[in-house]
Image 1 (tube, rainbow, N blue to C red):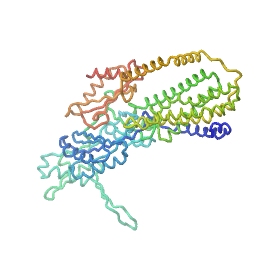
Image 2 (spheres, rainbow, N blue to C red):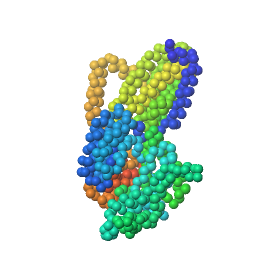
Image 3 (cartoon, rainbow, N blue to C red):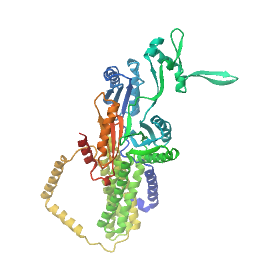
Length: 629
């Protein structure tokens, strides 16, 4: 059965079908998350084991090697790397892409648990987690409060801000950077310990055993069931100082008689600075499948509420990756509209019929909008890859409609009525239209099944193109003949060939009469194209001007945190001398999101907007590198 003829004779089902598809597409478009890159699922698992005070050489032999040997036998392991620093052993395992991430996580947990008894007893409990590629922060803020001490501000961030922000939809983690942690320190006097005949270990065990709350079961009192608890934890530092320590011979002494008990902060292992000024910062990461822009907007709205509730605390946004993502999204949508308008103009120049141009133009939204519904059904997002596919396919979507409408116009020019011309022309050209579409799908679909990490990124590219082209086939076979049959008008005369068409006809005639020369020119162009391929620079992604750069600083082993702070202050001062730099955020104690170590630091350099600086980001990066060398 000719589906185009059926659509012309029964227009209602086709119109209703595309009305439903348009509603589904528009609804899906509004709910699609906007992200910078596609959500990829790479099975990477990390095992972290900490042993306070242990040297790297001891950890390597006693911990790291045993963990690696246990993990090596797991099915699907592709790469395994370990980083050993003082007191820390981190093993990162990358599995093959076909391995389920949850199974990989469970296998690594089981492997580490099996060798738990072979590891030193003084280590902390191993932490095995899955590394989420989408778990990177999307926005970071700095908190300042002149009326608060550093420990009070750090506690405010941990206890108040984190809880308020974790309730925002789409937020997966709020992580504090910089600041300090409260610590009650007991400094024992060796001479007094010797005089009373007690060791530091004895004091430690008694303080640990007495300063704790314990559950004691339950009991019935006055006909009611009550919980029984042992409450021994100290509420204040003074109460802790009054703790009685048992001595040999049945004697007792207060803890503060053996030393001093002070309320201080623990030794800092990290720091955060903005343009050389110490701050307490916090970063927000989005949950998997959520929109970068939606999460950042919701967080900004909650931050405004917090500012009104706590006016004494100044909250400033210091870093974000959302502005570039939103700019790329808006630029892509603008390019999409421009491409659609130019495609319609080109169609009009060649068809020279307003009604035929309108019919061809309708094919664009009817093909693109339902594609958003297909993207939502496949759990895709609006990112650089999927939007690139939509932009590229814009010119392809009208191909089927142009072929249909041009053949219908030709039949109308033969003296047939639009209704009869649409019936016969659509039947005549149907197989060719189907061949065009299936060929395009066959070309682009294999891109989605590419292997490796690149295949994870480009999976959405081929499927989005195939979905949009498939909907364009439905439009060409159902809607275009239907509109032509009822919207076109008979032509009274056949228009004369224009100058462009006459020139094209002469060029085709010359190529037919000079076959050898035509083939030779084609071969030379082909060989020149292949040769120029090796002159192009290669890379996974082109250079981008995001207005944001990451700089890693690593000092020699044994460097103290204070020395790292001095070095980063000098680097910050030199970078801030540039007029195109807006701010420099320093996160000391970690290198580009890797393992924590006091001799490492990460600098996030935020540049001024592109229209306010003469140099591109790549040139600025090169100049900063030369100035710091």
